[in-house]
Length: 306
Image (cartoon, rainbow, N blue to C red):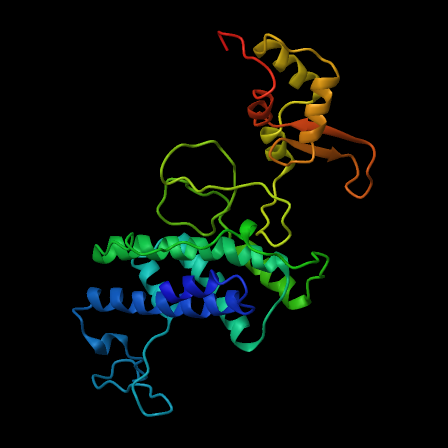
């Protein structure tokens, strides 16, 4: 599973999602086999596919190409463990979706951003479920390992998002949706899929992830929703100006103020231009971040009680 995560987090690895699915399902099959053996007295025979006729006392094990005894696969084990109350239904459905992705990856591949987003949601749940099952079944704490996937929103996305879904990709998405539970328990250690939302908040904790707004085209992109943009840039011109009147004793809405403000507009730390039509420069409106006050502090004197 660690290998699967390591491959997924390689941003420039073109086959990373398919490889993640293959390795993650391999990890789950081994974990399910370990659980099956634990529940059956560690008898290897319980894992072998027995082809003997019903009622026969002598086993007749199915063989692989090399003549080795064939073991039950992940789908059989997951189904049986679920029937025995040992495997959560959300985990069963997540594995079904991941197995379908694995099978598709082995025989073909995809390059559609919508599929990539679904893979991330399923993959996050797949890893989360693996960690929870290892803890529940074997009291094995995997927190010492970096068992997390890099969020899609800080990964480079394809240049175009207008790629049409193929028939097979549509079938895959429909299959995923057919498995998705109607209701989910956010408090459960298990999940069918995990949604990702990135939100910027001010924090002074030592484990906070530092980020910086930049126009550098080589920087990993983080795409904000309109809601998040409004949260980060809450003030229009009038609200900013009123705020300045409130906190500065020598503030005047004059040329000095306008020159300072206009010099900061192009910096995304301080301002954001919101266009009605992203492809047209007008009409538009500038919104300001509270960060701009740190610059205005250099030019105006704060009131004693502010």
